[in-house]
Amino acid sequence: MSSQAVAGPHDFLRAQIRWRWSEIAFWLATLLPFVLAPDYLVLASQIAITALFALSLDLILGFSGIVSLGHAAYFGVGAYTAGLISAWGFGDPLLGLVAAAFAAGIFGYLTSFIIARFRHLALIMITLGIALLLQEAANSASWLTGGFDGLQGIHTWPIFGRFDFDLYGYTAYSYSLVALFIVFLVARRLIYSPFGLALRGIRENGQRMPTIGAPTHVHIRTIYTIAAVIAGIAGALLAQTTETVSLEALGFQRSADVLVMLILGGTGRLYGGLIGAIVYMVARDQFSGLNPQYWYFWIGLLLIAVVMLLPNGLLGGLELLARRTQGKP
Amino acid sequence: MPPVFGVLFDGLAYGMLLFLMSVGLSVTLGMMNFVNLAHCSFAMLGGYVTVTLMNAFGWPFLATLPVAFIAAAAASVLLERLFFRRFYNATELSQCLLTIGIVFVSVAAAAYIYGTDEQPVHLPAYLLGSITFMGLDFAIYRIFLIAAAMLITIVLVVAVEATRFGAQVRAAVNNQRMARGLGIDVDSLFAITFALGGGLAGLGGALAIAMVGLDPSFALTYLIYVLIVVSVGGLGSIAGSFAAAIVLGVSDMAGKYYVPALGSILIYLVMMVLLMWRPTGLFGRR
Image (cartoon, rainbow over all chains, first blue to last red; front, side, top):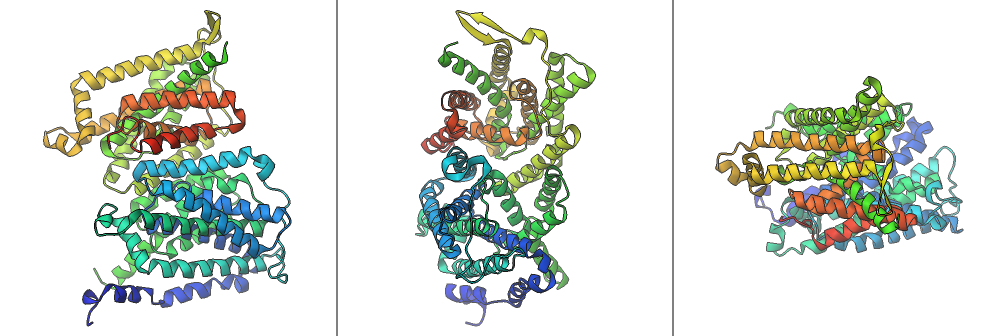
């Protein structure tokens, strides 16, 4: 094995999965808010949760080419499950997290049978339809979900009975960050596995994959269920750290926001959703004085600019810049 | 009025509005496979043009309609030349993102200029009230709406079926590369079609505001309905859009009338079931 060109698929994957210095630096940097910005830990925990949600969308959109305009459905199922369990008197956060992951996973598995059948515009409409249906259902079932007013009476117990959720967000950020890191490790392992390679094949050419013997539908169902589980975990984290759940957790706005973040960061590159979430959430926090109506004016301009000028997102642009400065083609 | 007839009548009027707002998108999607989520922004533009001309300049309602059509057509052809034409070969995702960006900008611009309140619409006296026929009341404006939409539909069908331009459009929808091979200038054909589609959306928006109201969220609210009509009807099919618009208009009205507790669940369910039954739409071929 002298060069990569003749290396087998396993060597190819092994070369990709090696940890890079930039990755280690990134994860060390996530600890900085504890030291540098202790006033912003609540925001930091929100960012970690949103990044987790964006990572989940990246798995289906960036790596498998399943465009979804309704990913908030799974986020919302997770959030409501964790919220309801807590409201019924079982406030243990880990129990809520596992239950939310299960509920979102089951819902994701059931809907994945529909998802796998569609492509193109019909797929976008179906994902949108699932989320809208779920939101309307949650709105109608106000005896369960609190309807328009949101779910009342959520109280999250301390983690392991020891670490209480404080006002400054120390526990919330630690908890969200650990969850994000663990899920990220799993997603990273998944993407650099033969299964991950098959997913990229489906993304690149959905017609050719079955002809080389890949069970396309099974792969799509699997990754869709996994992404739903991750989205559910993100929803549960939000419900537990903020102790509120409202219909907004299921809304179109949330699906659109996470899509914007992922596109901003760059799809199909694991860190795209994370970077996008950081940039988007920090910017929104800085402009929080702005009327939300006008905030979307800038988001709209940003979307147009990213699609026209940076088709691979911020990370893609950075890569291009790095390659230019090193004089490589 | 017996509920069944009332619901059918209202649903028909509502379906006609949805048809006017969506037919342009259906044809352009069928021709270029370009997912234009900003289509309802053109409808919103038409609505605001009508409101402004009526309230600020005192124009009569009917006189504002052609202006709404022209303004929306001009805006759509401008956007097509500036942005959209570079994205005909891009992925659906890029197209979606570009156009949803335009939707966000248009919604914010409308909110900035007109505020977020619903705009007042003062219809002329001869369009108000209702007439009684065989013991049933029919709102005059809705009769006007249905008649206008029917007229436009007939003109549209004749234009597409019986003119040289229509034949070229059908050829381009059917097989774009073959049409190019036969010497049809698909690019400029598409620009004209896009302008007409945008104009029809603007006209639909102008007609819609008296029935459904107008505020900056119009572009997003009706986008979902228009997308449902297009995807259920089948891309590039005028007859399909017509059928889908009526089915969805009637089922939405029926849902709101008979089972208000379900909210909009019914219309989404109808869409999902129709799409699962025929993923390419009722009249779609691809």
